[in-house]
Image (cartoon, rainbow, N blue to C red):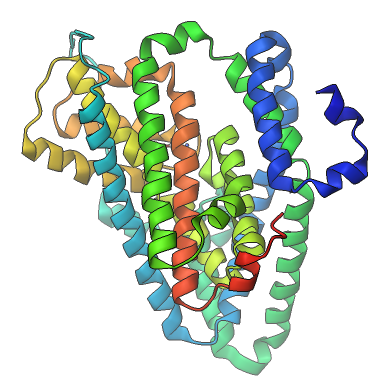
Length: 417
Ligand code: ASP
């Protein structure tokens, strides 16, 4: 560690940011394991970094989306992009639950635990589809900004951008203003990201320090299965789609999104990672501001493949732990409810655990399962958030590529930050 402190700025400047962040991540894990209380004292440094990226979310989503829409001349394109985005999000999520169920069946992490249900816990009520749709339009955009309601901000931004396009000549100064503000916010994101190696280091050290081996060991099996299933989904499904469908290098994809994955892993928040994801998509993958500004914020709110994998594995784990046999209908029900529950999961730490109750109750599994997992949930959250963010970026790449909104020269260049 002392070496990195004494390194000259010129040396650091030569190391790409994604490598610096990964080093921060690895050092954070080591420091968290070795110096428990010392590592927890680093938490404020991590929180400071987290606050700085969160500060960017609302203005960045709003302004870059308006600027992106006004840059898209073809209005039919927006409809096409929306349909492609939602379709890919839904299909990959259904795949994710299935992979979770497959790994949960293959490795049976709950076998032999012999838990007994008492039937005292209660499930959370899911909002209805009508409620979700009605809630999309903000009655007051300022309230939506203040509350950080991303879906409402997206709806308002699209409406404003489309109106600006319709106005034509008179809207030109407004369009230029949003364009210029978007550039300023990208620069600000860039500046905040320079602190990412330190921020990620401090955040991960704190998390590792607060999860002792005694908490993790009894559930090591299920943790391992979730990490394995997540890795399989990342490499096979995402890597496969990027290479097979878009004919782009999966290796460059993963290298380009590494900063976003590291921030997702250490913060456990897709929404919090959003500014970093947008930056990676534009700067490293060469996706246009319009596509990145639309697909990523939508994804951070509704596309949660990692959460879906987690729910698939855990539904089986809990059934096995309580000695309950599931039939084919119940498997299908899990795929359906886990897909819907992952859509309803907020992109914040711990949200997936609350939604797990929904999945369990849909097939009559004991809700005490939620309590069983609560102590290790943060460790699982790190894996699922990483997959959630990778899924958003994979979809952005596919949509950008199919709409000719992806610059292959940038994607294939060696200058990724
Ligand atoms: N923490 C996850 C995310 O932000 C959501 C979850 O808890 O599953 O993507």
